[in-house]
Image (tube, rainbow, N blue to C red):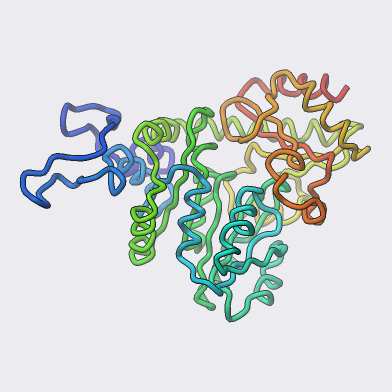
Length: 380
């Protein structure tokens, strides 16, 4: 199947075998009848497996060109599962510009259990290679990153990790499989906050993983079942529904994102606009190579670099909603320093460019003229 068809049919049965339902039904059950001990129809307890969740896991695997998909209660829960592949003393190299919740999980939870984390720039893969030690067991990447939209060359890093026998994990939340397929570029694990673009309607919280390797999948399935942070059937149903329109929504997100990025870049009050589609954006050529388009996420700073001014701008927005999260059909605005990245110490934030004036936009699928008019009045 071509990718657009996969979003609708990939990994799915055409109809449910029970009554011919076109959409996978919501199996809101905790357990399943057995004819004899161990005699069941593939499901015995819903922490271990549920038909609705199973349908979503097959879809995730299909759209990421993977072999196995796993669904969790949140994006953070999926990251938690990946970290449990490691042992005390192991080291993780991570992008220094990443989602605050991931940073918090790494430094406030898993660091206490003996894992070591090193946060570095990853714009240059050669520099990443020099940072690897004998204790390095995993490289963790967001591309585009949150919130500075840094681009990491997945293929170049995959070449290094294969040589060193290190796991390469790519958070594909911002790009989605519509724009980027990390497993095809050599990544070992793809993770998603399916809450965002995969769900697409700001009405669900869910996380997902996709892998190709059978042994790696077996370890992750064990962790998923043993730890129990699974996604429920209703949430799985909602993300399945969302995936069916992902390609249509992402096309509009990209179109609107481009229009908003160019408007902001030409505005007299704006200092920097961070969007991978600009030719002078760091690693723009890498983005062109590994992405189909440049997405609907962007960040910008004002020339005054003033916290009060940034807060005033986001408070004046009318169509853009001031809220956490991203990737929904509606446009959202956020202030990373006080919202999504507040858990990162200020000195660390500033090293990566997360200034007090930085505003992050998740550009939705409304009319682009309305979005630009909204930004005009808020900046005015």
